[in-house]
Image (tube, rainbow, N blue to C red):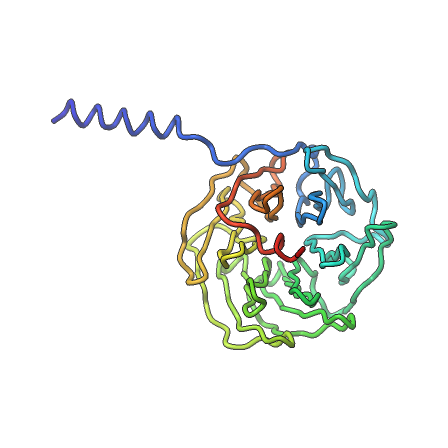
Length: 294
């Protein structure tokens, strides 16, 4: 019995040590990474993200992994966080310094204030529906509270909910019928019914985690959520029923956000604050954002 147990232990240890790692380093983007956030992929397969090298910048990595600074400095001291693209290729950014949602035209890189509200805390992440309506999380990190906003196509900001926890990751489900919002400090993910007009109702708890923070998140085409577990170094995959399917273990400990891309829309790119690399892994399903290009 002792010999069998010892041999079994060795087998388990050997398998664990030699188990193939799921993630890989996609691109090196520099040593300044404490603000690295907001990955999003355009229709050409280019990956964009915020704050490489210094705050206020926008970085770009092409499909071959070549990194460059796309915008060296946003105007008026703005510093962005989340990024989203609409179906026309317009880039939208959450500017947490100046309480803005910014837009960038890919044709000439012109930056404009798309929406502004001085009562915003510091817009953090954004989600987008197929018709171009934006949703923005708005945390107050000092007080561990937050708000949730909608940005209509007329550029009007509508406060959907206040007195929440520390709102951070936000995402629209496939079909635009559900809206997900997480609270970093409280470690909760909420889900709302979402009307065609962008109204929310029937708020309920999807899942609550016992430890570590929550950051950005994205949906795949089946409705599974991929959630950056800040401090734990994983991406949690959660079903639409709130079941934890599994966790992808990263090399980094401080993932901030995730985006789908690649030739088939199944490559997940993860921005991390404690490494100079953007990590990546292959998912089983196509990302929802990838399908919005069609």
